[in-house]
Amino acid sequence: MSGQEVLVVCPPASGDTLARLLEEHWRVYPVRSVTEALEHLMSYRTSVVICESSLPDGTWRNLLESAPNLIVTARTTDETLWAEVLNLGGFDVLAQPFDEREVNRVVASAWRRTPECGDIS
Image (cartoon, rainbow, N blue to C red; front, top):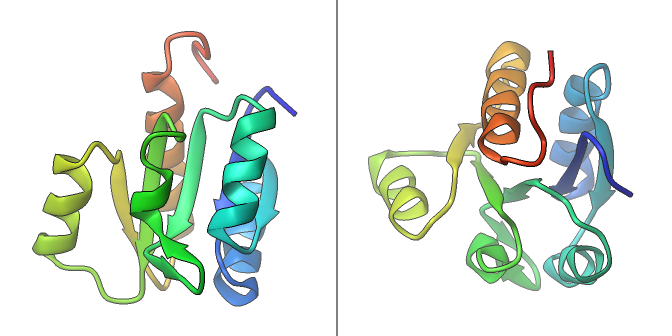
């Protein structure tokens, strides 16, 4: 897979919600674990990854080296999480419940940050 793909690493409830919000503009590839995400990233070049802050087999930190633009989601976000994500090299944090315009704005911004992706409009 390539192109305007977004890898979504979330449990079914939040992952399905994100997929619905993104599918009009992006090709969404959902996975349910850090392990699945790492396997995908070893095989496919994916510029934008959205990951739930904590999953049964790991956290967003496990994906930092493999995901060029990592967006973290969490049910409760605060300045501490946001600062940690940005300081460690992540792109941004999205709070749940998701706002469709904010999700698409953040993903588009992350996509534009990847030089080979170019303009998506």
